[in-house]
Every structure is written in structure tokens, then in C-alpha cells.
Length: 199
Image (cartoon, rainbow, N blue to C red; front, top):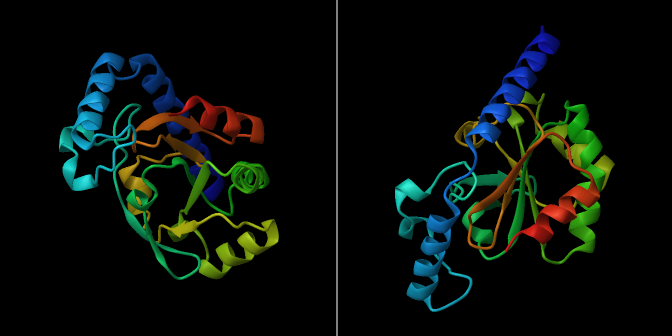
């Protein structure tokens, strides 16, 4: 039953991705103009806009939009908000311990995090689908993960971001905009390339 559900989720995700690709991205000219307006307001190349300053219509989960802010508990027992990392290039990765492709990409994510100072990785675990937080802790210890692991205990954030298959990663630029979306696992070279392509 669980295998059938996972296969169905993957198929829905693939169909969704195909539709997303066929629709294309937002108008680049409008994005550039919005960025220039923000920069002129702050007087800086990297604006420090907070979520409340961003028009609601500019927040979304498609390429070019500002990623929705959220706050989750971390595996370390603290809390973290996406906006806490504004000004950094972010790989926002949604994953689960039972997902083989997620397991496959974790060592690559860890290497990128260790070796590239400008790369912030936030791994949002779909905790509701796990047997418990202890399973996530054991996984992180086994893989030697040191990047922040956020616990989406009710998969509300995953729902906000429209996550179907895992892993899915949102690459977010220093302005807080979604630069690209990767459905499926990425290796080290792919992750580095995505970071290098971002502002």
C-alpha cells in the first residue's frame, strides 16, 4: 500500500513538473524591474526586505517569486525561519529518511555545505511521515549531517510549497526569490552549478 502511494505521488509530481516546465517562468523584465525598485528603496545591492514588506502577490512557489516565509523547530531543539537566512544563497531541500533518492543525495549536500562558505542548505524533513524524531536524529548521525535540519511535523510547510515527490529542492537567491526548482536528487556538481548560477 505504501509503495503504491509513493509511486502515485512520484507520478503526480512528474506530471506537475512537466506542466510547470511547459508554462515557463515569470517575465524576467518585470522581475528585474522589481529588484531595481527594491534596491533603490534600500540603497543596497542586496536588499534586507522582510516578509511584511513584500507585496502578497509577489510571494509564491514558482520561479522568480519570493519564497513564502515559515518557522520550524530544528533537530537541535531551536527554531529557524527561512527569512533568518535572507542575504544568503539557499538550497531548501524537502526530504524523508525512508526516501532512497533523498538518502543518495545527502552526502553530496553535506560536502557542498562543508566546502562552500556561500552555500546554505536547509533540509526540511517531512516528520509526519517518519516513525518519530528519533529516526531523523539517527539518520543525521549516521550520515554526519551538520547543516540545519528543520522538522515539518505536520507537513504544513511541505503543503505550502506544494511538495509531491521527495526530494524536491528550491534554490533561493540572496534576495529571497526562487531561482530554480529541482525535483529529484542532485549530486554535488549539480548543486554547485545551481549555486553558481544564482545572485
